[in-house]
Image (tube, rainbow, N blue to C red; front, top):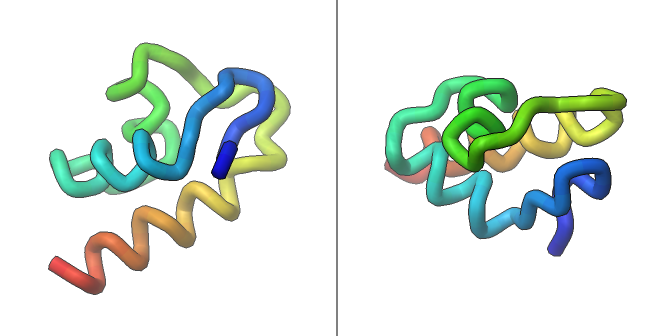
Length: 56
């Protein structure tokens, strides 16, 4: 599933970044070599990161 349409970042990439230590959407996007643009995806990315941290 696509999390960020502006950057074509997929859920899998956000989950991988969270597992690698990203604590925020901005950190996850930076791990993908991107940055948030319009910001509509940040709440969804944040929820993915939170779920990965809870599972760890």
